[in-house]
Image (tube, rainbow, N blue to C red; front, side, top):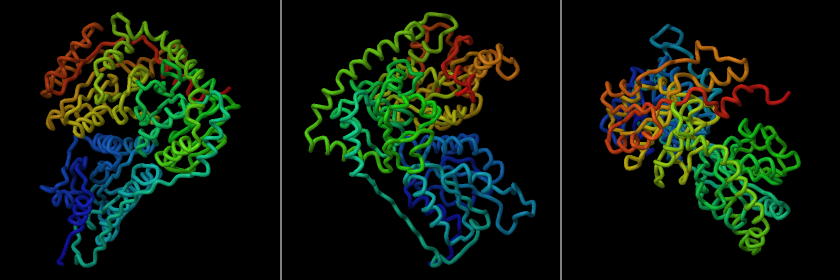
Length: 564
């Protein structure tokens, strides 16, 4: 063994993890790692902004259920990542952010891009680490990687000072660790209690959240639903773990989704809450009847009981627990009786679904000009009808309209920011989706405000040959804010809510992509057909009605006023 630098140790540790891509923007403080990743099995994917790099890593982590890796330089490179890190933290996305920083010997000397990075990011991540010993770099990378994905996933921060990376040491001093944790803890005693509570209920519902996706519990969830006859709803990355087209799936659990969700949430007597959180989206638990029993299953024990008392809380892995539940049902031979018991409840929800969608049909089919945004969402949903099509939603009102409409057939095939509602995720998410799935169609629907945040990622997509199709719902400004102000204070404040007509499609053409402009609803589908047939990254600039008010705008107007 001879001398080895910290940069080489970091590169070799990343290669050892069989990481396919690192999403990055170059900088001097991380060049010591770059030089050893060049021509290695790990590919560096460079973006035009550090925020976009982290968003891409986050989307990669969401879709692969393995930590996405982002790497940025010190100071402004680091601070540019913070919104994306906060989004990943709120969404529980597995992610490792590696950041360079000023050398240990130069702290407080006013060196280039010197700042205290750790105290800023520590509250925003699952774990924040700084390695001050060159020989320990492989240990820290291993620690960061497994921390990001074990238990409840989340972002992990790893800081590597540049002098630690540049230092040379005897390789014999290095301890190299590479641990993979595969554990699926399940509570068989409480599983039996779940069955008892189900047998005592009349109107139960299942709500499957992101935990169902991260535990890969789709097969077990479908089996459980079919064995019990309990109607299922899905949320966040749980969407698609049981297909929206399944006879017992009633699509999104959110009350703003046209369909049965609002009625079910109001009428249930037992909520089986699987890998989801009692957040604003459920009015902090108040959307369910006070007398309803709540079963909450989560891999993170501290999450159980947030905002509402839980009748049965179970900390554990969903896939394992659902497997036990399915086995108990078989052993007891109670499947047919349960299906029969809840059959009338299912029929009631099917009627509620029909009744709940009826008011939105005129908007989904609207022929108005400017185009109703629900008509735009429906056109995209109808066109993106392949089993493996991927749709990304970005913006304020725009992902609300798409979330009210999208039929999700497979998990991991619809992405939006989540409860952090961070604008600008769209192009990075779409680019990551296409990079991971080059054979699949990827469509981003985004607001005209949100497209401005990472607009130069159009250039990244062109340079990297990622032919995604971007549809801009152009309502001339910040629609959600405009409408919430109209509701709350009686008028919109033009400064800050009005952008005006911008020819985004021509800007994309200037970069080398394809641009299209749509004003009539009947032209949406032909534009989508032409865009996907072109094989080029395409921007379809669709002029939508600036006066339509989404349920999201109404909710925003009442922000902080949930109770008198």
